Image 1 (cartoon, helix red, strand yellow):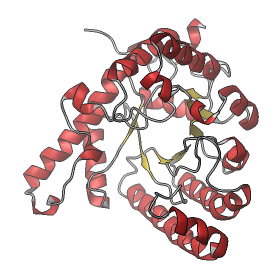
Image 2 (cartoon, rainbow, N blue to C red):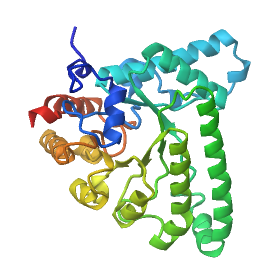
Image 3 (cartoon, rainbow, N blue to C red):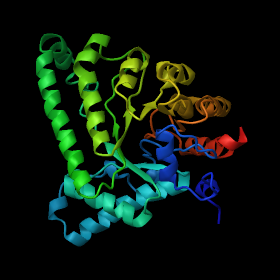
Image 4 (cartoon, one colour):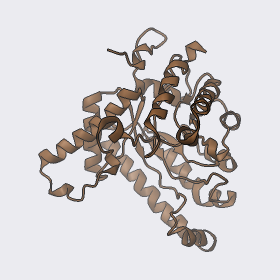
Length: 337
């Protein structure tokens, strides 16, 4: 049987580290040697890869009408998909998309994943109370409110913040099975942030900083995700002190080495493989970009997690992602550089 990358990963004293241990050490920017950790924010191609619908694409309108046995089968099936994906592609972490998303169902899913995989994988889920780019239906109204009634947006932000912290406290009190939260509110277009610098400082920074601080008090790590051109707001994001920044989108003009200069050597960075090239580029363009991301990410010697610049989204060719993973397996090793 083909060995997982995990079987080749060792601590300095010769003992094996789990994927979770390597992921956490990388979030702490500790040197780990060996294979660079890898994960994807979402792997939506589960139907093509495993013949199963991704959990977040399922619709459980009649969940509460199901028998306990039926719900348990669905929970176990969703847990299996997450674990099978992590095993096949050597992910160090699993981003859980709870469905349904009430506290009891979330806890049940986390318990089932832990029962089936132990502490092998770092578990995370979305937990961002800050404002994101609004959808097209609400964009004009939201933009007007930013200028005319920012105080009302801040009042709503305080409530959203309280709800996020309360939810995290409940999970913590139920056994702390989750390792961290990924803060997935998108702030940026490819050209520039949706918010001006002043608006970002007023409407986002106070709540982003506080939620990170409160999660940390509960023992949770945080990864701040946003696509697009983050460069105008990067310093403000980094000052809020997440453990890592994801996704370093080259389609938004984000240069990994420039980001490293700005945030310094002690903040973890995740991503930077160009999703646009994976979908529409030539094989050679894809290979060059994948190897560039690895080379630049590994240059710091620590604190880099390999991934796409977004996620493995619906429509992305599975073969291209598998090419990316194979190149990482071959070249993404600190001990071979």
